[in-house]
Image (tube, rainbow, N blue to C red; front, side, top):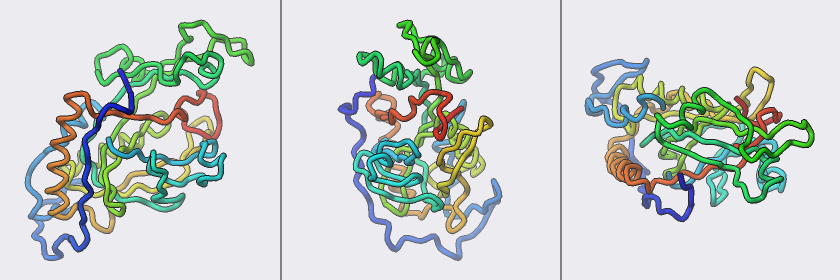
Length: 286
């Protein structure tokens, strides 16, 4: 599947939300997922179907210890940037508030950086699919690694370079403080946090774009001891529900995103830093 950035995505016109607030006197009718649902939120389920089987815009990137932005001094480890404009929106220890609008899963086959360096004709993203029944999807769900078909050898280990299959959980979200739409991707070591966000959305039992969630920027670690900076999702404590005017706007944006996804014009762009070797330290790992 092509990830050509020239393919058009849905245009987004930021909408000012200054002054919008949830009425303090809203009537409460039900409690789900540990939250109270205000009476003015319709009993709809739009967006929940996206998350079945788990479970674009600017792209949210968390700067890692080995990121080019840190190496060149443009950012610090743990900074959260909007790519490709490189606007900093948060830092390690802070949080960002989002409203999810649309979600979809993509399955990727990744070449390791060493293989790409040795074989310049290859790209770090070998292949991708959004078909849950595809061979790539099956391998990604089972975290398969396999010898590269070119037979290229890693001279340090004298073993073939390994192609890695991963699941990418994608969320198109509204950044509340920054008043814009962006793509969030969770994969490899971050995949379980993408699943967690999906579970929080499902617990609301209301349309996806009605809820607000906080993403805390903090260190994550896997069982091997690899450490990286990731996003930990939780229900928004200050205001768990999106204001009515914002919900109305995001409902319209969701319809456009669904149409773009179905017509294959919603394009995902991933950072080549996901193509690190599975044994690399201080980076995302399974």
